[in-house]
Image 1 (cartoon, helix red, strand yellow):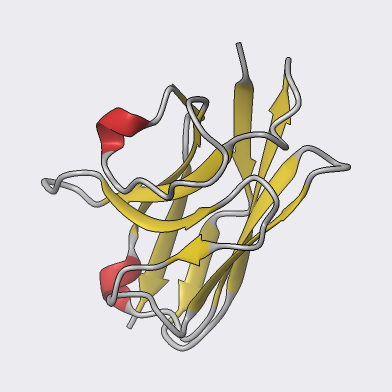
Image 2 (cartoon, one colour; image 1 turned 90 degrees about the vertical axis):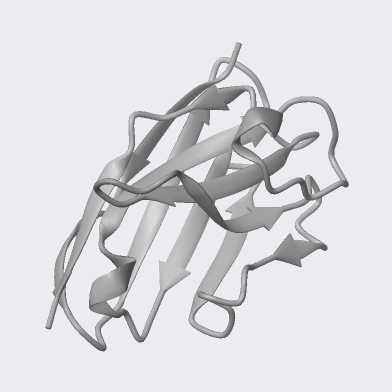
Length: 126
């Protein structure tokens, strides 16, 4: 089983940037798709980025495209989410997750991911 620990969240003003990290342990993640999700109060958890095992393919929903960048360092067993031009509506708890069923297909549903971190909160003030 893979254990995931997120870090890097915090309070930032609108227009600012944050870099989230997700450190994996227990198993190498180089063969798995990794995703970042977020959940705002009263809302469903939604995907904000996904990356293939090699890092060659990425996915972003329109809401964050051009502002968020997902990357990975398989040697460090770590995935990152660089967030810029942050908006108040980006406020949420951000979760890292692993899809242990494939390394290529970038699935977007919560149910496709097998293991999750506990999340790191991000608050964007206006």
